[in-house]
Length: 336
Image 1: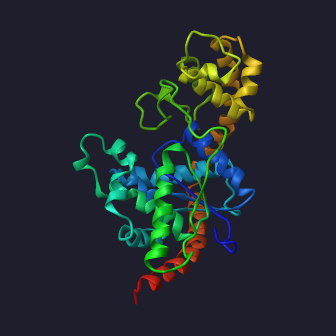
Image 2: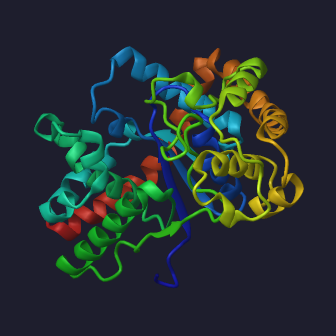
Image 3: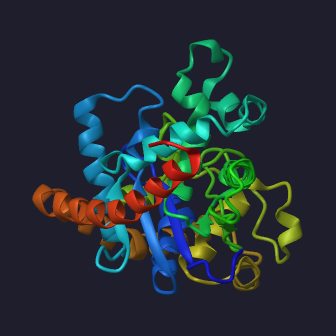
């Protein structure tokens, strides 16, 4: 990275319904920590959301709900830029230019498209196919230097790095786009389903018991943790002994992250206990962390005017950076 490049973090969250524990532990908690140390831009990525059909009224509601989630989790819109992606036209403009830089072979290697499109990929939208180019545009539009990513987004960030390098080389624009670095959480990058420890916690899973939503009540959290899948063996004293116990590992990971400790320390304290006893402690820890956030989200959702003001303020700030950078991109490409 060029020594003169200003450090800047960019990340986005899709507005696809209720935020859950996986969003909080895998992204939001980290976002809040990062804003204390670096300049940050956090985006509600509504353009990404429409790669699969969204009911328009539901999408509007989800954009505001996700914004409420950002603020309730501790993001400070006076410190970080918070806005929705579609309100800054530079994202779409740069995405098209990068569509012409990126290669079809690169797209064909993207594993997430194969997973999301499934067997009927001929029927998937073109948007879903080129979604990683839009993600690259999101990052490069602000010349972001760092991107917090989970395991499932590493490949997309690698692509953004390749596109930045190719653009710089093709147009002999030395170091115009910085090559963005990943920020990978060391302690926990994936929160798994409470019903299947081999699958990521997701809003799309049918059973409500597969996830803890940030707006869940104390009773709902207690019920979901009680029903969370485990095994009959007691808690071991070594991490290696959890290798073939994905559900057990997931619950211990969640507890460790919520209580700001390590899995090793948790095992030290919990070794030999049955999961029925451990689940009570996990429920208490989750209630103490999640319920205050849920209350804030519900309060914020009743004030659409305030949420829209936050997004407008963020859009204005984001547009200042985006217009300057997209103007320079057009100049480099040869547009008049």
